[in-house]
Image 1: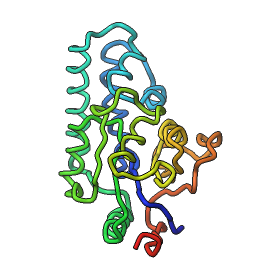
Image 2: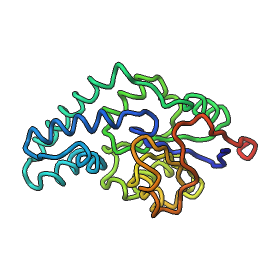
Image 3: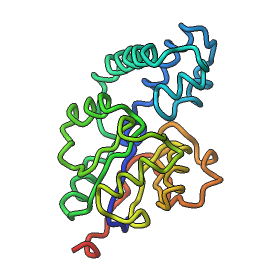
Image 4: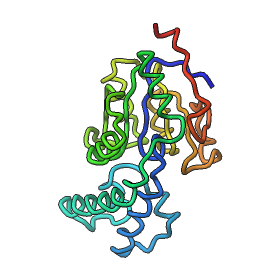
Length: 220
């Protein structure tokens, strides 16, 4: 498929790197340590938004802000320790990033991850130079499916929302793109196509980036 857009906005976890299983496993361990008694699949359903939002959904009013920060740090420590030796871009993405950059198409990252985890990936894979805007959980007040993350990316790129394509792996992320008036490409690393049937802003489904290309002439 050939993509036409003035800007690409990438979610990070599960979209650029196939690491969501490591996040879910870390949360599964920690949440059940505190007595949540949740299955892996039940934890997977809760893995969206900011870390403190997730904790509040599972344990309403149980933890102070300071305690949630401490739990969040421990969760990220476990995730990074497990994922670091396996870190790599999803197949075909390195080529797409280089082609997009070479053709002067703007790129951003819009993620519910904290900046600590985004830096872990960007510096670990040496891809920071591709992105003109990086919006993390630390930079917004409302998480996906609220459109704030993606609207902030568009604003920082100085591109209209309708001229952006979002790359996502989760239904909540696609909903955030729809709420921002953006089209989406869905990569099915963690979710099945049937989980997105209610959204009409999806351009295509992919399982890697090998068959995606860009049309450069409209940007020159």
